[in-house]
Length: 161
Image (cartoon, rainbow, N blue to C red; front, side, top):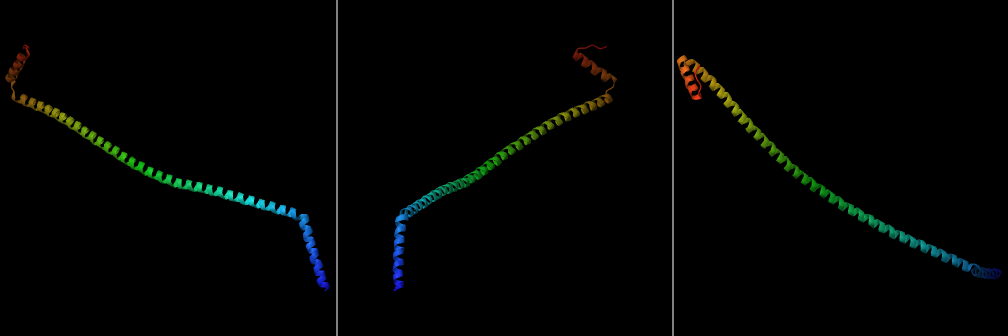
């Protein structure tokens, strides 16, 4: 029985100690627990706000990446279009320059042909004059020569010396 009595006394002591502790420190412990709870709630709200901000920032950067991909595609398309326009423009210019060169060459050839014809005529005329002179000096005697000179001088209006 002593054990039971000691047990009951110990139980009463424990209850008294718990009651005294609760009365003395209950409000302080409850205030500390409430304060800790508030602090944890505040940190959770802060973490949720930071998560929300980070998610918004991530979405913003994701949109930027998507926009950059679109911009890149636009730039590639524009570069290809400009390259095609440049090729076409260069081809037109090259064709025009080739036509100009061909026209110049034709003109130069025609000029050279005319010049060659004129030189040929001059050479033929010189050769003809030389040939005529040779023929005339061989076949004309002094009396025919004198007769030709007199006719020439009478048409020119000169007198015989």
